Length: 301
Image 1 (cartoon, helix red, strand yellow):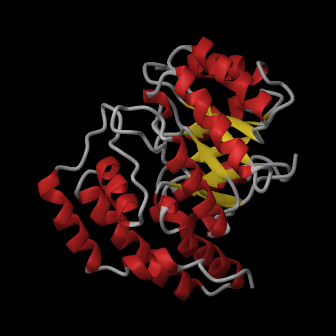
Image 2 (spheres, helix red, strand yellow; image 1 turned 180 degrees about the vertical axis):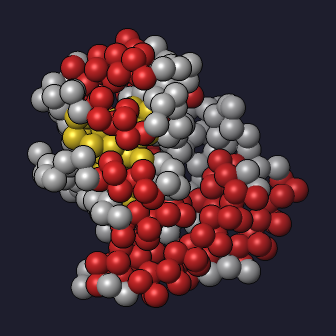
């Protein structure tokens, strides 16, 4: 397959007040981001809280997103689960509804490389004709040796690497010289991962400011690293505010500011308290938040 590329939101999953998937808001959010010219969607990942959702809800999210996208951009469905049987079920369903690829975190409690490999193998072999991307985010072993081991999986197409170690990242990029997708998953490192050869970036803050990451990647490609760094710093100032307030709850408040009522996060994530909402908004006003949100609103050029 051709490598996947560009800017991809790690799509937030909107919920109703009683905890169901909010289909209408999810469709509106997908359409909003398509208008921002995102290059794809990563569904039910960490930001989408897939691992905290029942299998039926995860299947429904995938169905809604694929139906709304209508083949305009590729969609990767995250299928990771502690129970490998659930992951296999989700992977097969993703293939049925038209996903471009499936992906999985290293599940909690998988404590050694052998068990991680066995898990990823079972998930990938359930959909042998669909590209599989490991999601490297912590785990029991160094990322590079683990990726070398995973390369024995026939349909391994690359990885989503979420971490700050750009030396490690570069080693993963160079494991293959073609047909290899390596997404950076840490928004704060977008520029530096692009410098190290990332094919794209997947991130949480791309739910509301994907345009700045497109510009950062453009700056890198054009060799304008000074401007790329200036934009990265601006984006990181916004991201830092969200982290200061508890990222999952703060992200949902930010989406509320943009007109998307996404409900509250799933446990173990906690909502932002009412008393902190005005403070969050005030802190964001001290950054270039609205400027960054507006980037990408213009027509393609």
